[in-house]
Length: 78
Image 1 (cartoon, rainbow, N blue to C red):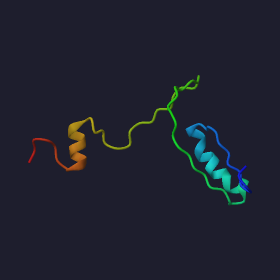
Image 2: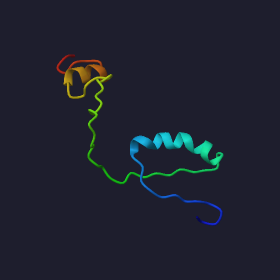
Image 3: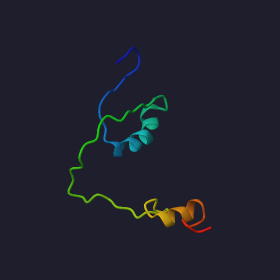
């Protein structure tokens, strides 16, 4: 506690930060400020498989597909 304010300090998993930001206004009657900073990477330890999501844009590792999207032409073509 600092004067009439509280300054909680701790760690929260990155996946939970957005949830906390959404709940904070109701918990503090809109009078809170939230600051966070990345501290470190930790290995994922879970029995749940890591989610996978297919690409929805063009693959930059596929040169022809990427150039076709970016400059609207294939390499070597005029």
